[in-house]
Amino acid sequence: MTIEALEPHGFCAGVTNALRKAQTLLHPKETVYCLHELVHNELVVADLRAKGMVFVESLAEVPEGATVLFSAHGVSPAVRAEAEARHLMVVDATCPFVARVHQSAVAFASRGLQVVVIGHRDHAEVKGIVGEVAEPIVLESGSPQHLAALSRTRPLGVVSQTTMNADDVEDLVGKLRESYEVESVAEVCRATKERQDAVKAFDGDALLVLGSANSSNTRRLCEVARCRTFRAGTLEDVRQLDFTGVKRLGVTSGASTPEDFFHAVIRELEGK
Image 1: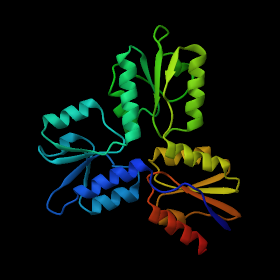
Image 2: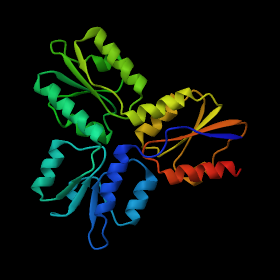
Image 3: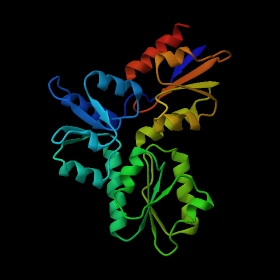
Image 4: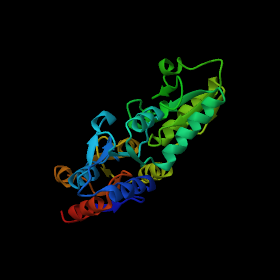
């Protein structure tokens, strides 16, 4: 079996920035809390937890006055206000690209546009974006049922979760333009699009995507592949996969997947 490592791989800039901030906070004599997973990768989270970071799902779990790290996915103004009210020492690891999406949503709302967010409503990033404006609409698809909620009297201001399928976002914005007055800055981040483009260009007979099951950008890589696809979050996952019949295997990774894991998998596969 021939192994082909697809480019790019490794952490995106937003993940690198978040991890750098996390590492500077870790201290054996002080407990640092992180609201939600810093990034959606089980290996990264396990490593930070082993070093003493405590992950929580609400600020109510953080002692008053303690240090809390906001994840790369961003948070809503309500969460920021709660942290201030409880005198928490906040370190913000929001991805700069995500922060720009927040700013765009606020700018659209300030001009009276109806804000539309293309994304998965239960994802942490989308929850943060929709918390910025009044009565936003979240579109997970372009079905008539979803589109029926949109205003016919106001222009739409469209933004997107940064880890969506780039083609789906483009298609949905196109559908909206057919029936509505639309201003759009909806796009996925560059790291997401570059990885998706590389996967779509791969013409081997199978693809292995390295990343956690709860990682949106990892799942999108599985979706855009044009061949048989496997996903693995750990070396043990890789060892359980059956590559029988695969002659040319491409290997890629989500933007929050550690490089040491990526190279360990390549070595594992080449040793078979």
